[in-house]
Figure 1: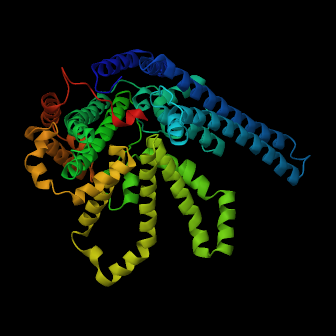
Figure 2 (figure 1 turned 60 degrees about the vertical axis):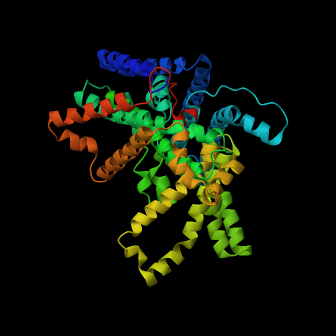
Figure 3 (figure 1 turned 120 degrees about the horizontal axis):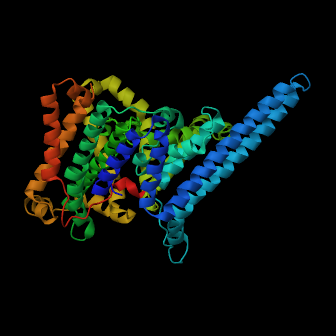
Length: 520
């Protein structure tokens, strides 16, 4: 059920009516039922996998919690009868059991994800067998990460295991975020998700504003840019050089408008139910470095990798052993850097393969990591140069940093757009070796399915997004609008609605495209 479909809008309206008409004590049950209906709409087979994830992670968390309580209770009851060494031994035995429960459940869920998502990648790379036709369940990467993150938090003792399996099922299957995130944490979402909510016009209005803004990004900007992208991608023997440059820019616009637009719709729908989801973007194209960009882009995914992969890996016992060995036999600089380097490359390898089951995404992820690590190593040189030249104090240096970061991001995204590693690099170098720029920017621009009006709409849309991002640096635009009188407020809503109605890509003859991150 696409967010841009009439079926989705109707589904949300029905869900809202049922939710607020129902007695408050069963609102969460109504929402759980709507979640299951939403998932069933995508196909019966997919629900088997999400239910498997719900059951295994719920049971695993409960077993861990029960083992913790049993161990603590036993030690407390026999504290006068057992020695300190015996207590330590009992705690270690209990911890091993908890770790066993965690390992089994993680193996099951990441095993399902790996088989469904990466089997064909393995077959194509390492064998001559035919690929397998798997149907990837909707949102499997998102709900797998969210549910396993919950279980790890229970294991670490930073979250309590939910006793009611159906309440936990609501957390895993909440339909607005099921499609493309954000990836929520149990401690952050449980209160907002499970408590009762009275009908609030403020929540409806704020949610509607966010949804409208999301539809504007998706239908006016992203889907229009996608038309030109499809043409450029269709034949690289014709569309290279300046076309590749145009495609690079269009893809950056398309990806940003598509993904942030989808998240806006998700957060807006949730807010209509009185539920607060975490923000997933914070003006990423205002970043002055790649590292900062990834602190602003897909925030919840990056936080998940940092908390559940990078830190555990870089601070693990075996990593410390390797680090000490390297310091002793190779040198302190290598030994001290190895945990960070190895963990960073591992995280970005996984980040790449999470985005897509092909090697172009792996290369994309590793290049991001290498750029950040090299930048970190060169930091002392930058500081020395700045101390001598003082270039960072120059008025427009920050603008240069933003443009530089944006250019690097756009170039790296070509690996995502073209999907083939060799082809992506050919198109990248063709931007500098081709002499077709004059022809493309005079006549060729109109040969990729976009008219002059389309380019104007895309450019105007980018300007609007840029201005809104500038305003958001000091105060959320919705808060600014809330302070205005209702005439100004509703005039803005009407203008955005009319822009979508007039310039949106939809209607007869148009095949609505899914959001880019739906495939994950």
